[in-house]
Length: 303
Image (cartoon, rainbow, N blue to C red; front, side, top):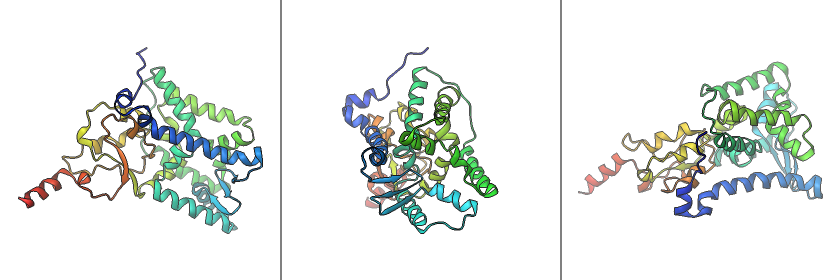
């Protein structure tokens, strides 16, 4: 077994522990904090969030409906959808369109805690082989979920949706739901690196479609500082989206991740000792964001 190496050593040395883990810690606080807000009701009688991740009320006033669940409802042909469900879906839809669809995957979804643990153990055991999937597999899964909902007239996927199972289980007890969660954990460890979230989850596919138009992005305006350590590539849940922006300056590729696959998790920002990455806007036209060809043209005009 190869020697296990700790990622981010250079970032910790140069930036300090907090700056090398800031977005990871904030994500964990977000995930756990959201769970606690739901738990305060049944545990302490303080009803800040009532319901679950599929459908809930904030302070008994603001409806919030998961747009993926709402889409399944539409697919079933169910016509008597409550106005509160429609309003709630529009509120959450607007939020993720603004901040990044797969923000749900990294900042809200409780299954992310499980799959990140799988990733850590897989590295610890130095498991490097695994199954390969077509890049669009999860989008085919999304299509299948909607098709089954339409044909059956019921939201069948919600019976096995690991996000719903884990969230309800944490609040009210898991039962056999542990088998589903354990299956995902073992699948990610021994079968495929980040197999569920990256390759199969239809919920992630849906939020990835929303993320294609989100203005909040991860940028690499200082990509010229990159020393090819590849640690960002290792920690990224969707590593295929990184090389193009890091190596695309000569091709005039903007230094911004426009792919909806990005989860806006911020791990690439944390782990980079050169501070190549940061959060910004997709439309930023600051001097740091202008491709090299445009910079050269501007210099020629000045001369």
